[in-house]
Every structure is written in structure tokens, then in C-alpha cells.
Length: 190
Image (cartoon, rainbow, N blue to C red; front, side):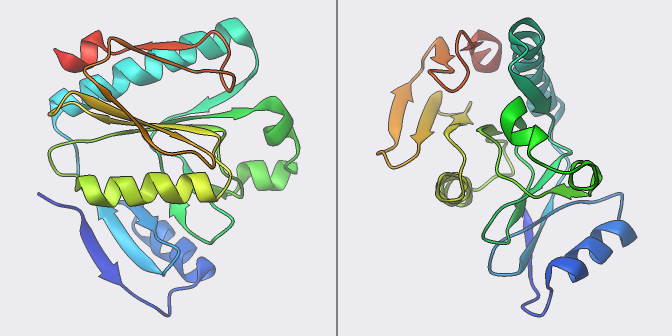
């Protein structure tokens, strides 16, 4: 099942907030064009894979103390007006502490994470995820990983650089964005 797209051009940021509040049982995203995207439930396999990614990221965050992490239920209001919820993400303390207390408590944090992971499920369009990753980069994300378990490929996104495609890698580095972080993909490829 593919994600459902609703084209509601009149839906501004406040309208989207109201839609989300009225439909708390749905996971919704909003493209910068105003298009509303309903994210379907994931399969148990995808949920397990996403949990493995989030667990590894959380472990690194605890050890490094360099920032805070977020799961797939967290929405970020990007500078271009899109509201996306990456499968896993990380924000440096410097960037997070630059927000006011009120901004930290809003439904959608008004910032782009420093690092994002998108995990392709059987219901995801690869083209849509690639566009989403490019949009993350244009809006301030420093490093992103698009993981495609079906094809055993990881696309690495960096600001102002070409996408690097890794074929069946065992690990992916956090590079200088997440120093010392290494995402083990063996659980994902199983």
C-alpha cells in the first residue's frame, strides 16, 4: 500500500496543525507544496528494522552526549514549510538549545535535524523518499541515510554533494556529523 497524498493547497501551517490535532491516530506529513501525506502503518519487519536503527542511534547519543535523538513520531517544520517525520533523527545540543522552551514543546520543532534516516518500507515509493532526502539537505540537514532493505542499498546524502550509493554495506559511518557513530546494518539486511 502506497502513502496517500492529499492535495490541499489552501492548507497553511496552522491548518495542518489543526488537521494533526483532529487526527491524532494518523501519522501525517506536509510537503512544502501544501500536499498532505498520510503515512500507512508499517509491517512488523520494517518496525523491527526501524527499532534496530533507533536503538543504535540512542546508544551512541547516550555515550557521546553530543545531542538528542528522535523517533519516527517526531515532526520537524523545515524552513521551506514542509513538515516531515524521519524514521530516526538527531539534533546537536547547540541547535536544540537555540530553540526557546516553547519551540521545543511545539507539535513540530521549527528546525531541520542535523542527521536523518529514512528506512524504505514495502509501502514507500523510492522516488518520493529520494525527493524527501534532497529536500532535507536543502533545508539544513547535514547528513542523511536512505536505507532500502529490499535492494540492500544505502544512499548517503550530504549538503552540497552528490548522493553516494553504497551497495550492501555492513556499516554506515556518522562521519564528522556524528563522530564515532557507526550504524550496523546486519540486522537490517536479515
